[in-house]
Image 1 (tube, rainbow, N blue to C red):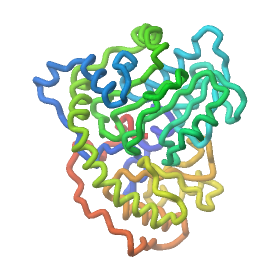
Image 2: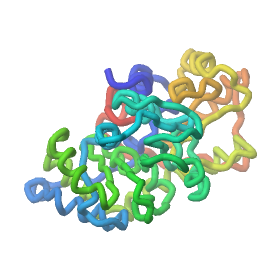
Image 3: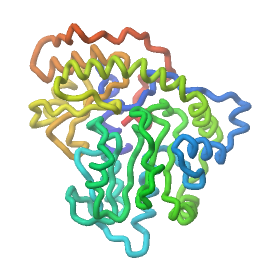
Image 4: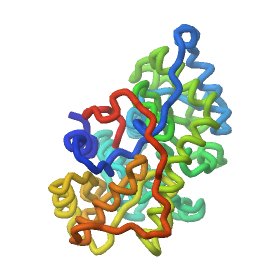
Length: 348
């Protein structure tokens, strides 16, 4: 058992048309470290590499076993601060571990502009796939003492990390499980504001274990091969985004590998159930705090036929015809071990 979204995806992983997993695992290959690289793995070197990537001092970067651990560690640290209030601001729909994690840390979650100790948001958005402008994010976070930004999908958008800005309230988190297909090695990270890094470092050392050498070496290999990874990701996502634009006119292509379909869908649970009956997996919006839609993912090379199957169910048609102007994704899938094995962590 994990959390409801991950359980939903894993328990229905055997469908013919999979539009549930938001990471690139199974669609691209992540670098595999050699024995020598594993023996030479250096956590401080990985922190330096991440600092260079994010344009922050490595002393502000803290390694975790995935993005969810990074988010929860920050939330529990901030909740324990002297004088911290309980209010946490969320904008639904949102990635569920963000609001469920905040509640577990003792915050009272509200979708309102009232003053708050903590404001939490994913950028790019999960499940909507869009990216807020800096001005919109600044307005939304106004009146919050701290701002935690989950940047798990940042690499897909090619944008600069918010941790590199000058706002002393901003905490960011990231993960290697999505863009880098790193489900097998499980590395995430949190970036603390400069003034908070020393105190957070002591807390981080108390509540987390060291990341294993294999994981350190794998993550370092991903950063060394980042140009090759970007090309492989683009090979899959570029045609899939073009297809999204053609099939959802008026809705811009997501900058993240997910999209939220609200097209005349008053009951996302009902549609998700009908999709399962047709062996199509989508994620009901209820899991993200908005029951009126469903989330689709664009990470698979089979996206053209998977999307056609989804649209056929949604629109009540026996067959869905994709726009002729949209080129099919003809790339052959490169083999990955355990591609279709249910229960893989980090796929939500």
